[in-house]
Length: 283
Ligand SMILES: *[C@@H]1O[C@H](CO)[C@@H](O)[C@H](O)[C@H]1NC(C)=O
Ligand SMILES: [Mg+2]
Image (tube, rainbow, N blue to C red; front, side, top):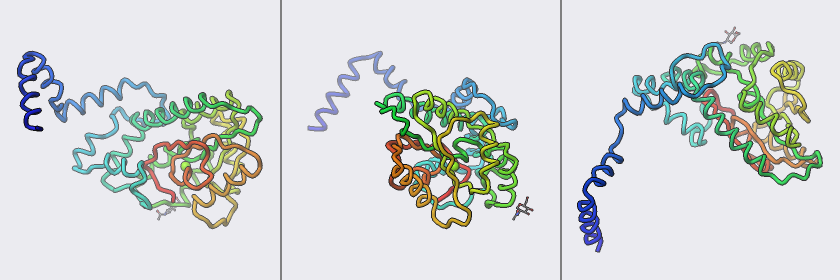
């Protein structure tokens, strides 16, 4: 039976003549170079506001990945899909790949897709408009970008150094992630109040407020920081804080972060959004 169908199909295809060769043309796999060229052209066509002075002219670094013979793009996908967990550092041979991903337009493009979905979702909501509807925002690599730090510290390939990272945080100079900021102001215009929920500690409140304000954020409902010395996983801490929000009568209509630990653990929020982050893992 299957063979009969196959023979019929072959006969039909043979009978259609010129459309047969068109079909063949369509299914021919592009060469690796053609894929590379198309990707580079695409990235050049995406006009992204510069968020870091080191933004290079190259694309996302596929060619670097290829040159090194390392599937860094597969590593990144596994990280984003939460198949890879509890990792300590970016593989050393993926430093160039991650650097170009972050600075070359690909990161911004991926972030834009996430935020476009979040905006469409927010616009589709039937809101009560009672001032109790909130959206939870993580801060690092969500509302603010620490790319200036990571760009000078190996793009996540070096073990986390709390001393030097905290020095950087205390400068209060982290740039806003433009996509998240667009979502932030869209939500306010819809009557949804942003709540910051961060793993930054209470002693960093003043500089965090200053940094957020300098970068154009204002009008948030709450800024929730971790008590100093608080010992719990990020998931336990953040889900606990979200529970307190609910207990206080808030309705969490959305939740956005760059770590899975920002968006796992009940109550998660009515819908969650995961921004890309190949720089570090927080469990
Ligand atoms: C961590 O950063 C501090 C401050 O920049 C530096 O003095 C120290 O050597 C760093 N530690 C490591 C292990 O690199
Ligand atoms: Mg974060």
